[in-house]
Image (cartoon, rainbow, N blue to C red; front, side):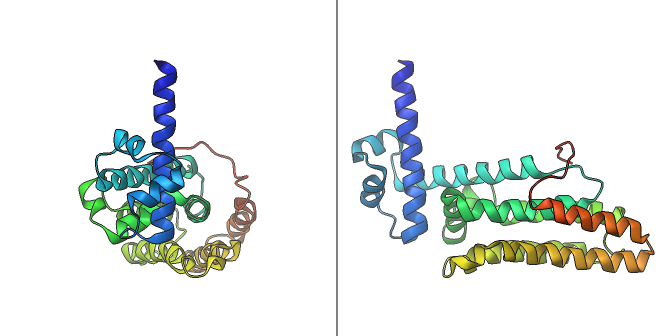
Length: 228
C-alpha cells in the first residue's frame, strides 16, 4: 500500500511538473492535456486519477510555485544587522530561483494570464511587495534609507525590477544573467550611500556594508534565519 501511494505521488508530481513546462513553453491557452501527458510520459487516465479538470491542474501548478518561492523567502530572510543585506540577498535568490525553476515561472505566468491568484493564495506580486516594504521600514529605522523616502513607492520599484526581469527574459534569456541581479544590488547600494550622506553615519559602517555586498553573492553572510 505504501509503495502504491508513493508511486501515485511520484506520478502526480511528474504531471504537475510537465504542466508547468507546457504552460511555460506554450502559454496557458495552448497548454492542452494532450501535450501535458506527452511531456509527463503518462496516460490520460493517470492524469485524471489526480486531476478532474485542466483548472485543477493549473491550481496545483500555481500552489506548487507559490510554495517554492515561499521557501526561498523563508530560507533567505535573515536577521542581519543590515536590512539591506537581507533585501539584496532575497532579490538575488528570487531571481535565481525564477531563472532555474520552471514551476515558479509557470506560477507567475498563471498569475498574469488567469484568475488563479484571486481564487487561491493571493497575488504573488503583492506578497513580494509586502516583504520588500517591511524590510524597507526596518532599513529606515536603521538609517539605511533617507527618512523622507516614500517606502511604498520604493517597494514598488524593487518589485517592478524583479518582476520585469522575468518578463524580459521570456524573449531574451540573457536577462537572467548575474549582471541583472548585480544591477539591482547596486541600485540598493546607491540608496544606502545617499542615506549615509544625509544621516552622517560613519564611513566605517558604510565600508562594512560594502564588504557585506561582496560576500552576499555566495550566500556567505552569517546570521539566524527569522521572519519578522
